[in-house]
Amino acid sequence: MDFKSYIRVIPDFSQPGISFKDITTLLKDGPAYQASIAAMKELVKDKQIDLVAGPEARGFVVGAPLALSIGAGFVPIRKSGKLPGDTIEAGYNLEYGKDKLAMHKDAIQPGQKVLIADDLLATGGTISTSIDLVRQLGGEVVGALFLIELSYLNGRDKLKDIDVFTLLTY
Image 1: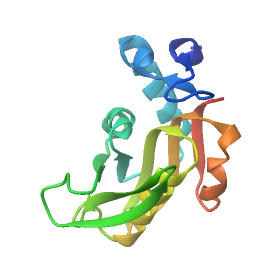
Image 2: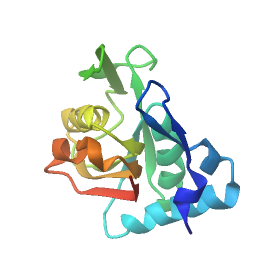
Image 3: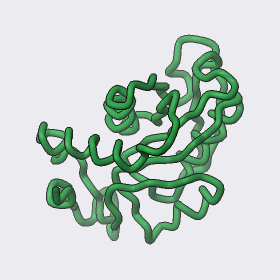
Image 4: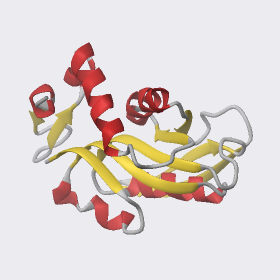
């Protein structure tokens, strides 16, 4: 399936010079969405995965159905202050400031094999922080899986010791 034909590209959003890749046009098409999850599952078929972790919010849209399809649990990675239980946090830099991601302290047991899944690999900051959180809890990151990679932003360079899988590359 030509998944790129389901991705709407919006020029100059959210600022001039940005070519935004809008996945909502894929998500609203049930057969295409289902096929994209199946294709992503195929990319990691040789990995042993206990849990899939996905950063808020689009990582939930990719990670949860993927976890369900492979029979693994799903762990949400949220913005700081959004989880009700005891959490761990890690900070990361944004273009104009800083932010923090959090996970429940009991989300991952030491030695569990965790795949990080998200919609987009851009600069790698969010995923690097997600990897840090998984490792803080003793999880083994077995890879990072993305619907889209913006290769010109070199996010993969921040993930040198991680197997990276992408369905679409721009």
